[in-house]
Length: 268
Image 1 (cartoon, rainbow, N blue to C red):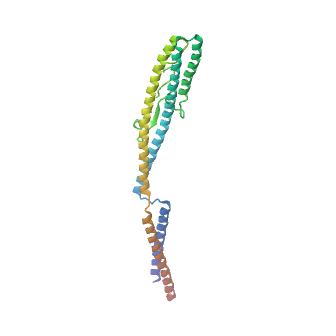
Image 2 (image 1 turned 90 degrees about the vertical axis):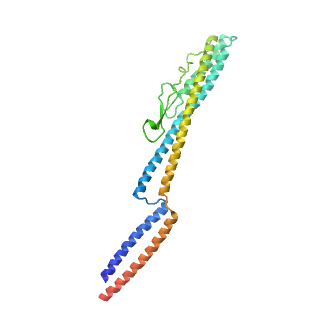
Image 3 (image 1 turned 60 degrees about the vertical axis):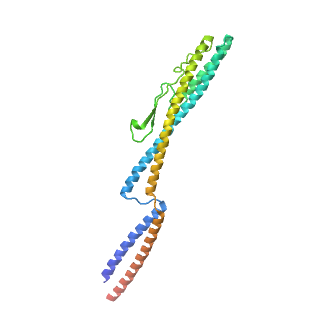
C-alpha cells in the first residue's frame, strides 16, 4: 500500500511540474504577445521575415538613389536658370550699338556664369554619387530582391560639362562671338531640358518600385505578426484552466501524503 501511494504521489508530482511549465509558457506568451511556434510556423516566419527585410532594404536603396537624382535635377534646374541668364547677356552683347568696353564688362559676367555651371555640376553629389559630371560612372540601384541584373536599375551618367554643352569656348567680346554664344546656349538649354526629363522619368519609375517594395515589406511583416500573435482571450482561459488543474493536483498530492503518513503509522 505505501508503495502504491508513493507511486501515485510521484505521478502527481510529475503532472504538477508539467502543468507549472505550461503555466510559465502561457504567462510568457501573454506578456510578450508572441506565441510559441511549431517547427512549420518557425520556417514560415523565418522565410517571410527575410523577404520583408529584403523589400525594406530595397525601398531604402531606392530612396538613396532618388536622393542622387533629386540633387542632380536641382542642379540642372539651377544650370538652366544660369544658362538663360548667360543667353540674356549674350543677347545684350550682340547689340550693334555697344562699345568694346561694354562687351568686355558683359563678358566678365558671362564667364562667371559659365564657371558657376561647372561648379554646380561638380557639386551635384550625394555620398560620392553624381549622375551629371562628365567622366562619372553610372549609378546602379538595387531595386529588387531576386538578385542579378534583373533586380537592378541603372541610371546612366549624363556626362554634362560646359564642353559637352558646347559653351566652353563661348565669349561675348564681339558682336559675332555673342551671336555664336546665343546659338550655343539655345542648344545647351535644350540639352538640359531633355536631361531633366530623363532624370524625372527615371525617378518616377524608382518611386513606383520603392512604393511597391515598401508595401510588400509591410504586408509580409503584417503576415509574420499575425502568425506570431497570441489569442489573448484563449490564453487567459487556458491559464485559468492550468491554475485550476494545478490547485487540484496540489490538493491530491497533499491527500496522498496524508494517506501515506497514515499507512506508515499502521505498519509500524
